[in-house]
Length: 306
Image 1 (spheres, rainbow, N blue to C red):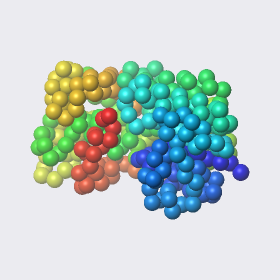
Image 2 (image 1 turned 180 degrees about the vertical axis):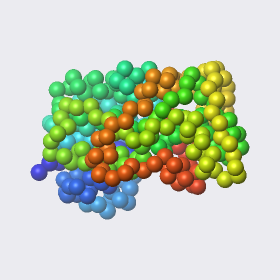
Image 3 (image 1 turned 120 degrees about the horizontal axis):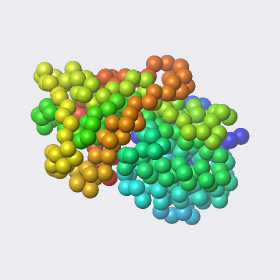
Image 4 (image 1 turned 30 degrees about the vertical axis):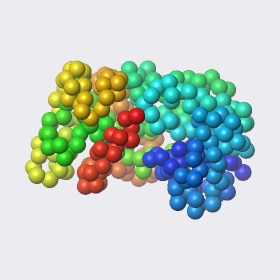
């Protein structure tokens, strides 16, 4: 019997991994670690899994949360603050090693291992620490979420009425992938008895699209015959165009993402996810139709920009 410990199970990706893992292994084999157990979703509460308190800022709680586990699903901390992320990830890895966890599955991001993007640096540091920990690991570089497109597309909000979107440095292709597909594929990797030990995997979409191509899709989906266009500008112009939406402290580091796009860091397509699912992946146009109908752009920006 293998015991699975899941972190981040109330989050956007983690909740999907949890839901799919429940279809693959008995609920009695799953432990959910939450910094606030009272905030567990109804889905978690009614599932029959064990719920424990595990708070990254309280290492002793992680020892209790991970005790008796064999596999740990370590969801990256939901912030772009580099030092905070790394500190929390190291605390979890150290606790897992102390508790006797045998295998850690870490959710990294689908940028290059030598990425120039600021958002990837905490992942690179965590990957390095995990590899040096002596534990069996599987690093899962989760593809760029289709649902996170406003973050990459100039914090676009159709309600503003502006049809020109500005980004700094460069356009570039992104192999967008829906979180539903990532959740299912990730759960299958975790549940597998063997095959992914000490590997770095990429779960990507299968149809890379540039931001200019995204503009065309958005124009197609939005009502009113709008013609959304993309303009590449300087970093200073990008900051000035978005300073009313985000702080300069966020915009400057985030601008390095577009240097990474210029290098093709997010354009790589790997067939692994599609092979794991055995079906077609959800398209970017499907995601746009769902999100623009529900007007979710601002919520996406608020979720990640912290």
